[in-house]
Each structure stands twice: as structure tokens, then as C-alpha cells.
Amino acid sequence: MIRYDSRQQDRGFVALLLFLVMLAGALSCRGSKPGTLAPASIPTPAPDECASLATLWLPDATITSVTVVPVAAAAPDATDPVPEYCKVLGTLEQTILFEVALPTTAWNGKFMFAGGGRFNGSIPSLTHLLARGYAAAGSDTGHQAPSYDGSWALNNLEAQLNYGHRATHLVTVLAKTIVREYYGQQAKRDYFLGCSNGGKMGLMEVQRYPEDFDGVIVGNFVLDRTRLMTAFVWNARAVAENPIPEDKVPVIAKATLAACDSQDGLVDGLIDRPDRCKFDPKILTCKSGDAPDCLTPGQVATLEKLYGGPRNSAGEQLFPGYPPGHEDDYPMYQTGSLSNHPTTIRIRTGNDFMKYFVFGPKFDSIRDFDFDKSPSAPEVLRAAADQDAADPDLRAFKAHGGKLIMYHGWADHSITPLRDIQYYKDVLKQVEYADEFVRLFVAPGLYHCTGGPGPNHFGGTGQRWPKDDAEHDIVRALDRWVEEGVVPEMLIATKFVNDDPKMRIARTRPLCPYPLMARYKGSGSIDDAANFVCADPQ
Image 1 (spheres, helix red, strand yellow):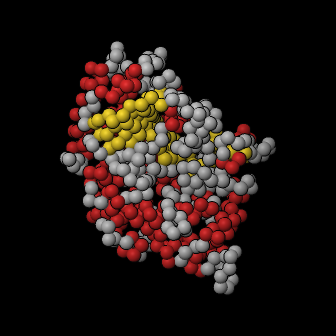
Image 2: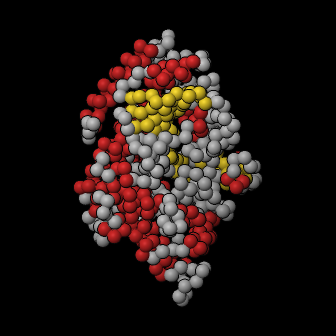
Image 3: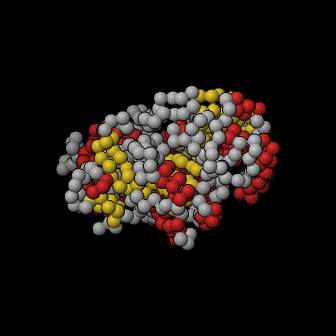
């Protein structure tokens, strides 16, 4: 297999591929003109149209199965039914598995790609997009493995490149062709939705293939993967040297809430701007020895390192740390061990990246990583070329007319929100009139993509859309921005009792474009978004 290790080579291949799929679409479309938008009437394909896709010719791709999936009661993350759809499975270049899901009777005329988490390795669920009426697609990005396992990347630069960005683009091109063949017309709009690594996938598209999508939503996104993995190693080493027992995590969370909750003028169990809270972990130091309600000096030092982020011996900041607050999920993301939390993010993901993408299988990141030399090692820089999505120059996407909505949780303890906020600022500096096409929403009390003590449902990946409108569903907000030019100046996030969308609503709260934040008007229920406005931080 040819190794495409530069953008120029890859773009040449892509140009050829685009020409071939456009030619295939022109020959196969039933009465539609390639390059035109879908007409007002949305077609309902005949029952045998799904089966006919089994013989569809696609360059470098094979369709392996075609199935009509009947109506399902509801998506796993929603109460809305999933319509009947045509499920197309296939392989691209014999290594990239993909799925395209095509509503048979309830298509809204649009297409959306679903990003996958962590190291991907499997095709993500598409039911949340089908439930909204979109034709949808996703891929495993070129390898099959558990999402936390990075061993597939060892000495496989082609697989690393596919995972980094190439597979998403190629599957997007193929999926658009399948959509056009099935419905007899191309989708009116093309969108992307992803969180975490899925967010990275969306940013890679915006940066490298700016004409693929009309609108993109990325949440809690990976930017500098190589630097983020450096932070994971830093945190893992700190915890290995001085572990923080799981039963002491609530002590930390209680202390940061007490210190930071009221800073916005409202005591509501939420820390709205943890980056503005000055919390000193030393106040938790035990007066003598150890006790259940305090931290030893070593444990305090560990917490300071988690908050502070990695530094080299000269004190240079290598990556931002995690702002204090809502640490209840620390055992999963930071302070847990593999023995009691097999999916602990900072141990497994960071170590696998350093072993299989960078230094080799004998590398022990906790023991061997050098914070003076390793971050700039040639192996790290090579990996960064394919895995980092931190380029703020989005002028080509803006020129395409694309819209970008970014979101992050202030209580994300997997990917710090501070780095993604800095990226947003970098875009504003790099691109003139960037506010015409990009918005960032940072949600108080939202963990990594889902969950957390704050209102955490607004239609992002893995979230419920409480109401099917542009105020409560970020996907509808993007669609309205692209279709009607209405800029999303506020989203309404919802907190359900026990975080169960089938139970009653406990609280709603506005999410405001950064740097604005929700401010209480001074009267009415603090659990009702109507009693808040977006305003500058005090």
C-alpha cells in the first residue's frame, strides 16, 4: 500500500478520488444533476433501492452488506424513535471499515458524519443522527481494536495517518456518493458532529479538507494530541509517586466547591468559571500524619501538579493543567489506578500513545519520559504532524461558507478546557472577522462530553436534545446558522433528575458564547434558564 505522508501527495490522490466518485454519481443518479442542491421535495426510495446498493461500484471500496433496519423504539441516548433505515457496511482500501445509514422514509435531506472517541477502532453509533432525520456515516478510521488500545499503531505509519485525518475524509467522500445514489440527489447540506477524539476528527476536516462540510460541531476536543499525552504522562507520574485514595476525592470536591461556587454571586452547586477561582490545595494539608478528611503533603503535591499542568526543569509550561472544581470523576480520569479503574484515561491512553505511536513498545512513559527532552524529540514531532489538530488558520473553511460550533465542559478532567479556549482565541487572532463563522460554548459542571453536576444535555455527542429546536439542540442551532444565517448567541442546557432523560427536568441554564457567562437576573427560580442572561464575567 502506498504511504501518503505529505499533504500534497494526499491531495493528489483525493483529487483523483473525487473525480471518480463524481463520475460514478453522474452515471448513476436517477434524474438528478450532480452539483445541485436537493430540491424542496425529499424523495422516498422504493423498497428495493436499498438492496440495489449492494452492487454499487465505488473506487477502492467494497460494500460488504446492505440491510433494511426496522423502526426502533428509541436511540440509546434519547427518547425519540429511530426511523427505518438502510444500513450499508463496507471497507475502503481493505482496511477502513465504514457504515452509511440512510433513512428510508424520514430523511430531512441532509447528511451528517459522526466522529468516534479515543483511538476509535470501531464504527460509532449513528442512531442519534438518524433520530434527527439525517443520513449518517461513520468509520473505524482504519483499524479494529478496543477504543483505549493503541497497539495497532506500532510501526504502522499508514494506520496512524488514516486515524489522524485521512480515513475520515475519504469515507466522507464515499458516503456522499452513496447518499446521492440512494436518494437520486445529493444532500442539501453536509454536517459533522463529534466529541473528544471525534472533536479532533472534525477539526482535522475543517483545517485540512475545508470543503467537506458546511457545518461542524466539535466538543471537548483534542488539539495537540502529542502535548496532551505529555500531560497525561505528567499526571500519571504524579499519581504514581503520591497516590490520592479514591475515598479522599470527595474531600477535594467539597473544598473546591466551597471556595469557588459563590464567585459568580450565586450559590447553586455549580462553579461557573473555575479558571477564575484561586484555590490553594495546601488548605487541605493534614495537621499531622494522615486522616480521612485531609491530604498528606505528598497528596497535596500531586493535586498541585494536576491543577498546574506539566512543566520542564526550567519551569516552562508544556500544557495547561485542569482548573479546580467538581473533581468527583477524578478516579476515572486522574487519580484511579488500572487495578480498580481499567479504563483510567491518563494511564492507558497516554502510555499507549508514547509506546505505539512514538518511542516503541519497551518505553515506560512513567519511568522513561523526560520532560526536558521528550516533548521535542524527533519521534514526537513526526507523530504531531499527523495527529495534532491545532492549526488556527481556518480561512479556507470560512471562505467555503462553513460554520463551526465548539463546546467544552468546565469540569472536563480528561481534556482540559483551558487549551481549547486558547485555541479559540488563536482562531480569533488568525482569521479576520472570525466571529462570523465560529462560536465557543463552555458549559459549567459538564464532564468529558457527558455527565457532571451541571446542566449537561444540549444535543452534543451522547446527549439528549430536550426540545427539537435551535435553542435546546446544538445540531439544530448549527443547521439554522448554516441555512438561515441565525448566529447561535445562546444555547439552553438541561439537567435531568439522575441524568436520566426519561425523568423530569431538574434545571435549565443558558450556555453563552465565550467569554460571556450566564448571570442570574435576581428573581425567579435559579433552576429556570429564563431567569438568566448572558453577560460579561464580573
